[in-house]
Image (cartoon, rainbow, N blue to C red):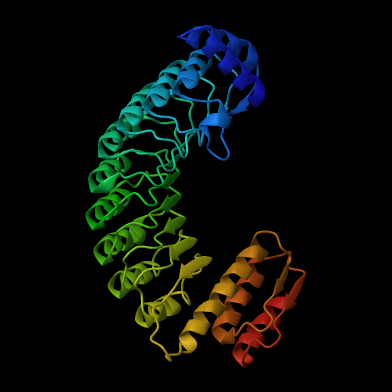
Length: 385
């Protein structure tokens, strides 16, 4: 398919100074009833991809009246604003496209404004991928307006766009009203404390938010922004994954995030890798995870002085993490629970006993070398019986 597209593109350029009508007619026949079309360039190369802004404009004309295309990949082609505006115009009249991939292009604010305008009226697009483009605050503001009224978009990635605090802040305003977006990536978007605070506040206030996964890694978020995220986690009951790696969060922010996990019952994954957290913050997480039964993955690194050693609380944190993940696996349909060499103690054994009480299907249980005393052993024997 890609070879045919490239040949038509070259033929059209040779035949006319304005090849769009020729390409459009060709693509009408070529697309036919295809549901997924990939025009990705891997690696990006103007000489080998055969796709440029002019070609995409013609393709968009063909796509506008198409009722079968559900997925379109145009990533890594070096496309600019003209291509984005053409695709946006097509989206306004296309009622079948569900996924659009524009990653690794050169789309800026003008193109984003066109896409935002389309999202105001489109009610079928579920996924929009725009990693590593050139969208700034002006494009983000227009996108924010669109997200307040759009009810179909479920996944939005703006990873690697220079939104800045104003752009990210505008998206926070959208999150205050949007109730359908489930996955949002603002990784590497120049988000600072003020924007992070607005984002956290929006998710705290909007009790009908559907956001499940939120990526804010590799930004400029420090303790102030982390504190607002912690406040959000204390009341938010939808978010399941929060990525805050490679920011500027220290112990003050980490302590608040850890405390929030004492009351939060929905978050399953939290990433705090490559921040400024020390042993003090790590120890607080170790304490909290003994009580939190829902977090199954915590990614965290701590700054430790040379020749300093981590005490038993860090190992306890790892053990309880292992315990929580293993129990969740057993509850999700794995009938055997192997906790060999996990230092449960009586406290951990009680958790296992609670699982046995709920489960009627557990077929195997291994508690070798788990440091269980009489109390924990007695509870598990009772439930096994």
